[in-house]
Length: 221
Length: 257
View 1: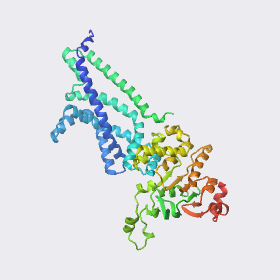
View 2: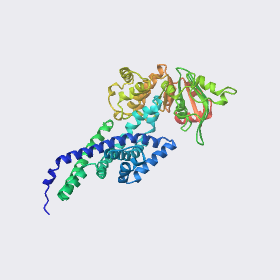
View 3: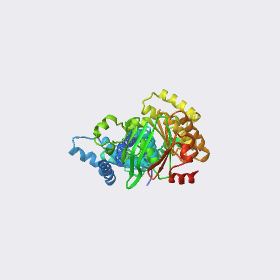
View 4: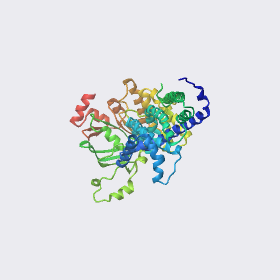
């Protein structure tokens, strides 16, 4: 069979808008996930049993149920029992961010645990209250050890967002299927898509490295 | 200034403090010495509530900082006492500065940020004013030139001098030193002791847990000797070091001097 990559170029506008969708879902999910993960990780270290149970249950659910099932549940299932209506974008972003929060909060908990108790004592001895201590002293240090897993989470998020094609959003993967159905060619579009994702992931890893170096600036001598 | 009354502290079954009575006047410099495990640090840490007393009371500046101990107030209404005298930990800690064995500077903040963080956050001091004060304090401990570096680049002695300046930035009435030179390389001990000595000379009320006997003798108004959670001697240094009353203090001094 003759390969013809020129067909890809007829779909540049579709690819561009699909890339936008993929990135929007990924970035929104990561940021929201990061926000959700803060209370979740604080619950986990709170020493208050109901909060710890809640956080443990939350994490185990999002770890234990396949992501695809979570997406379907949020998009098709939840609106039938609750008075809410989601666009595919909202449902997808919500699931991905709640899911990331579960994973990020685990590594954040580890990061917080690893901080020397002297940091808490110094803050307390200076009269700093719990909220300010967490926000200004503990979490900024914990974030450092969380950075590598945060970059990993970002990458797996980027790849997992392909699942939103299944609830009708036109992301990069969906454009590939589109091309396939119109041209009866599969190798070229999916090869192009693989390259797309690969380049994106490499770029993200690189950015992640830069970011890691930036948050670790205080360690430089 | 500080009144410790029949203070007990246990960690589970382990009794660390077994009834400490200690009185410190404003301007006093009191060194707490004794064998390791005798409860020195626990006593010091109780005074700014990094440890919670099991029983007994601590008064700082005529305020009760622990729960009232019923056995010290027979027949009195404890709620009344709490209402009249109790002070919360945050207010207390603003008045009591603490210097740790392991410095505990915030590694992700520069020296200046370490200095101004609590004054700005806790005392609500305007930033410019806090910076000004920080510069003056760093100058006084000889650390002004390191104002913009991160603590990771400092030596132990430099770090501890910044930590002392950081505690002083809160303008405390009392300073607690918990083995401030124990984690230092020998050649850095003096630079830190010099700073503490100058502070003692300035009239600051100080409690100092230390293993530096020569230094304790030089700067202290009183030496408190702790052994197995009891305060067994409380005397001026010239008396304590020359004619200790107890056998245990004599044995201890024989070993360390």
